[in-house]
Length: 495
Image 1 (cartoon, rainbow, N blue to C red):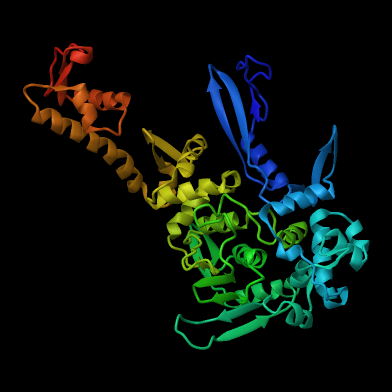
Image 2 (tube, rainbow, N blue to C red; image 1 turned 180 degrees about the vertical axis):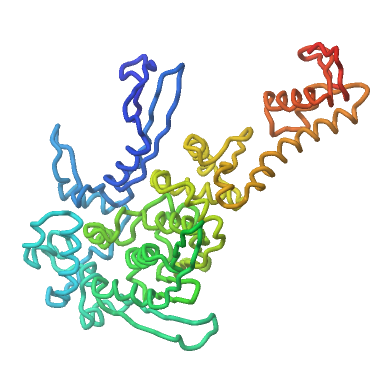
């Protein structure tokens, strides 16, 4: 959506004052639509042009607001017709979780698990009607139950132990605590072949039993960082339940160690998903399960669980989620709990909660890459201009950025900023000086100097030359393309 350009052809730039705080608008759209939204601001002859880039809906899932997928009928907004929704669901092929378990009945479902879901759905939606629905109507409304019968999603989320043992024994979560990486029996083990709503709180309680606290002090204030962040652990488990392949044998395993948590789920990544695009692409393997979890707020934003894991890991100065060991048969996710660099926490604290709330996952990854001197791909580099606009990074040369000096000061590393900014400039000056000296007394053309610093544009090289000339280390004779540079000062310089 473009603001500031005329609708009719030939189009012209007229400027726009719409959405004076586009970052806040972007965040609200994400919270409402549950999909990725970005924006770009352009200045054309002093006229403001604002462009919102809205990602297409996830493959196989309609966009919902407060649990309802909307559809235009003429000028009216109505709930999406069922045939349209089914057509969308069919985009990613067969959804096992929405298929019917012919022999199962409502009696195979645990009423306490259903009531736990009801309470969360009512709280999330604010719809008091949910409280008074019969069990059958509640299950119909969330599509766990259809006119054809009980879905496998209903069994996976609400099933009794006996029913799952009979109809879907692989729907099981195994928890293990191991005090070391040594092989052998686990120190503690629990097997949960029951509906997810009957055990999801218990799984977090088991992890939290041995959840050490790491202390970080800034001035007079002491902050506590848990080894295992609750939101990250819950998202990892939700992803395993939502995306595992229930047609394969094998259980979901949660293996906890003193400083890491490993979650393994059968089936590999869904088609179209890889480690490289896991933060950008959404392809639910079990759409019905994902929708039910979204209704009650356990999945806050469809497909955004992985983003939450990455963002939180950076905020807590921990290693990024690790998918080493993932193959076509299993997804292996390792969450490392140790704080790697407490000074990074001071840097994050300096950015402040207000600015952090406006950052995308790509922004967090770009900050992490700059701080740890990692290589950035194109999508991360595209975020640097915005980060510079809000004062988190500084532009120090052609396509070159560095974290703001204030952030390095907060992290106790002001010298790093000086080294990155100062050494880069001084090194380039020394390279120019060396080449001019070696070509004395013939002099050096500007074209040769461009060959010395191919990464710098004409203006940047001219700035360096002016600095060297001001210092009296070089001088110029001639003008324009015929000018040549020489070592030493020249009071009669004519260029």
